Image (cartoon, rainbow over all chains, first blue to last red; front, top):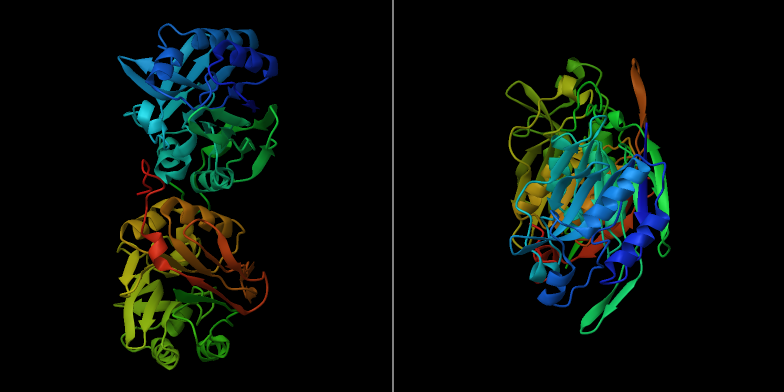
Length: 253
Length: 253
């Protein structure tokens, strides 16, 4: 069994150090795997390329990656977190997989939503699966949920648990993730943010919380509130995601 | 706008004429499109190949197809109905699309569930889309729902409405069809059956009703009961399924 924790936060735009300290405050020290929201260090609504340049980080020399690595060491855990990345003059809406030994892998969001397309480049690699030894995690970010091909690819490549940093503004994803679990027989851990992000010259966005962890059978194991920072946890057996037989005649994949 | 009706029935095994007369009794005479359950003329639980041979029909000379054609003429409507088919020594769990002029097209279920694999051959063609002039319907049958590739194929091939004859015994599909609607921006019409089917030597099956029609936005427009024969209807504008743009940056397909 592994203990999965999802931390639902309310980042303040541009306050990377404050947001990371807030994550540290909420951090669950007994979890094997901790999932944080999309863009959890910077906030979501960038106004221009100057802000993207200012707040995104090169992961070869990143305050946020170092901070989360320290957290991973201190708590002996794996962390999946959404961070704005800069690399070779391009910017990505990325998620890092961090172990106590540092950055393991990075997933660059493929399906950028709406205004993200103005600032970020789309990831060109296929959805990321990381083998952690006892289990494998898949990584997808927020709007990737609406394309069944993304979760399918993760399951086909062996993911037992789909980790899913998100900044959701619509109410559909949480239920759809039950379908993603059923159709692929995978656990999912969606870390959403809460709060209202108001920035001059851009429409306010209200994020919908309700972070959740689903079972390989499409059950909602635990669910967070609509509007509070909180930690939800579930103890799961990732091996249960590996038998894709529904019965002796039918296989899911 | 078109009026879609879904008829939820409780077929009696092997009583083809009685089941068709029951459908006639329930028939809604003002609908443009009427969707009936899977295997709605025969019932579901075949015990052996003799029964399959006895109750399945060659659609070039079929009592059920003729009966439904007459119903389609009488009511000036399109009917989608699940019927056991025999063709060239093989048997299929099929769905017919019938107009007042007769049989238009047949879909042979691709993803056979559990014991269906003993008696039926799997359909080898891709999921069926039929152009009805003012709108296009897709056809899939029951367990096809769990494979996102099926609904995806129907949407890619232009289906505005996925018609979905079913004999569901598990409670997951109805919610998953909301996801199928959202991820493909298509209407769906699931015609499930009700009742308990007890046959000697085979486990009893209880069917879960709750037939439904969903919108292109993933709303449940109407839903039937768990355990009554009934007709549900929705007036829809199939053209709303055609714009696959979510916003100026994002497209679903």
